[in-house]
Length: 219
Image: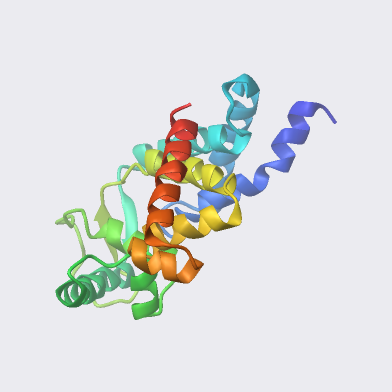
């Protein structure tokens, strides 16, 4: 097996990961997977390790680009009625949460409050951003569908993957500081108590961590 074929085979799980984000949106999974594999092959053929990126980080935008081509040809993304109803629930829960906590809830918090997966919450939030097509049927069937314009999530996903890779470079204490400060929205004082540090120590360490992360992300 050539190095090229080996890289393609070793990263097929990445194709599945990308395809899962577009399930139940009007295109069969086999078609999504086929397009994603084409993107992976293109990425492997053009990958340059000298850029300092992992193959996975480079390949994701290429894989998504091939999948997006399918949706451009189809014109719309199908979103189920249940997903639209979930978006309405999210709006109500978000307003109540914001009134109580004076901030918007994170996806993880909405997931806990509504008992749904974070991926499904994210899909419902995206669906709610767009106007409903006038071609929607007025039937009451559970599987009725809404026609919504496709949202390009390539940049967001690529940024998230790059951020996850940089965070993975941190030691356990620094990871915990980032988790508490930016994912659990704790204050520096609250973070200091959890980690048995002073607020000043957290502040200084946080500045160094952010400087390190900005350098890695910009490089």
